Structure formats: structure tokens, C-alpha cells
Picture 1 (cartoon, rainbow, N blue to C red):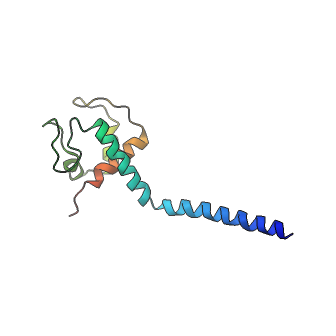
Picture 2 (cartoon, helix red, strand yellow):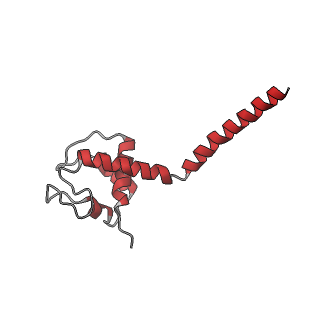
Picture 3 (cartoon, rainbow, N blue to C red):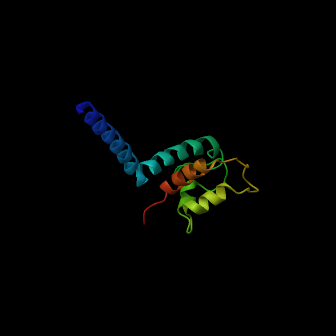
Length: 116
């Protein structure tokens, strides 16, 4: 009988811990920060040859805007960035970007927005 109660208590603790971990991440703060770090890694690999991916960094092309400038444009949102990243453009290579990669790049670019 006592063994059954201990198993029930252990199971209840395990289930509670599982839900607490998911509730902790439900606000998105840690996930957004992790996503922005992944976005920076992707930008280093894919975008840096043409774009300045950090403020005050020179890009290889004068025609490609820096990410900080993009982040600070009026109307730049996570959705607008994701749509842009998934659309073919004449002056950009056509990358095949998974949805989570588009999210990560958008989070990284938006992290460069200056606070007014």
C-alpha cells in the first residue's frame, strides 16, 4: 500500500515537473532569445557576404541594406520579414528556408531594432 502511494506521488511530481517546464517556456522569452542566436548563426552563414548583419559593420554590397537598417524601417515586423524571406527576389539568391529558420532570422533582425 505504501509503495503504491510512493509511486503515485512520484508520478504526480514527474507530471508536475513536466508541465512546469512547458509553462516556463510558454511566455516565449527564452525561446525567442535562443531563436535570435540561431538567426545570427544563419545570418553569418547565408547573409553576411552581402549584408551588414550587425550595426556598424560593413557589408560586401552597397546595394544590400544592413540588418539594423531593415529592423528600424517603419513597418518591419516578424511577419513582414518572414514573408520577405520566403519570397523570390531578383537581387538575392533563392534560399530554401524552413519556417523555423525564417522565424530565427526574423527574431535576430528584430533584435537589432533600436529602442525609441
